[in-house]
Every structure is written in C-alpha cells, then in structure tokens.
Length: 116
Length: 114
Image (tube, rainbow over all chains, first blue to last red):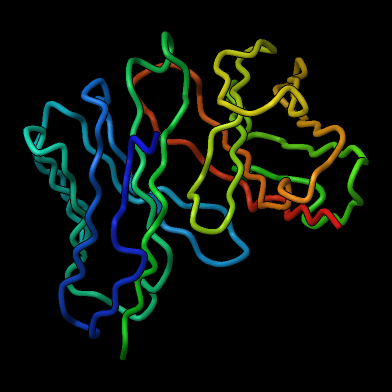
C-alpha cells in the first residue's frame, strides 16, 4: 500500500527554467509534508516542508504547494541549476512527533537532471 | 555540530549470516529512525527508537531488530541474511518532540548480501 507516490521517476529541465516535481498521497491523516534531496553516496538532505494547514511555503528558489482536496503536493525550483540534479523524495508524517513518533512515509523518488 | 554518522559505510555478507549496523545521532537528538532504501522502492521505514524504547515499527520481519543506548546511539541487527536484504540502510535523527519534524540523515550503510 503505497500511501505516498511520485509518479515520475525522472525529469529533465534546462538550466534557468522551472522544475516541478509532483507527489500524491492517499492518507488524509498526514498533516506534515517534507521534501528531501539525495545525491549518490549521501543520505537525504532536508529541503523544505509544509504543514497541512497551509497551501504554500517558500524558501529561496524552492516553493512547495499543497492541495489538500486533491491530496497533491508539488515542489517548484526556480531557476533550476545544474547543482540541483539529484533524486528528490517527497515524505509525509501524521500526528505530533511526541505522540506519534518520527516516522516518515516516503515516495519512490524522482531523478531530476538539470542540463546546462 | 557534527552530523549523523553511520558505520560501517560498506558491508558484504553471505546469505545466512547476521549483521549489525551502527548509528550515532546528532548531539542532543533523542530519536533515531532506520530506513531501508532499495531501487524503485523509495525509503521504507524499519523502526524508530526514542529514549531507548522502540516507539514505532514498520512492516519488516522479525529478523530485523534494533536497540538504542542511553547516549542515543542506535544499532540495527539483521539475522539470517537473505539476498533481498541487499540495500542502503539509512539512519535519521531528530529531537523526538516539538514542532520541528525534520529528520537528519546519515550517509547510510550499503549492505550487499551474496
């Protein structure tokens, strides 16, 4: 039962353009969503997050949008840079950490390639 | 502040053997979670330890176990290894409480079972 899905295994964009990575979820109990970036031979690095009470969160070149009715979130990277080439994971959690623990449910990941 | 460290980084074992992986969380973090990453499967949650107690458990067989020590360091053990256990095992630490939900990952241990 894949509760978090990233349907695009790969995405290729030109440097300077916008990258849009998508993520869908099925569990309406999820109340916090995160994006991680992963380079080969390294652990995932936290990028940006959003609470379910918001529909947008922005941090520099990265913006995450949440559409709760559609159970869909997306990560926008503008402008895209070659150094952004990595695997991007969407993750979700439910409940407060002190009561439900720190468990994250991850999507399968999307390989982003930004071409110079 | 030092990040999450995992040892060893690479490991080759034979089917039927057992293996122990180690994780040292960020100083002050009390929660340690373990994940398995295999190609096309994303990260699958194994279990979480908080203050030396297992707080959450994923859907993995009993061959996978773990523990946490009083200094928050954690170990993960896999007994009777199978070929399908070949994967990248990632450890993540967090404060374990409060409103900051980000987990910080170590570089992982690449386990190959032959």
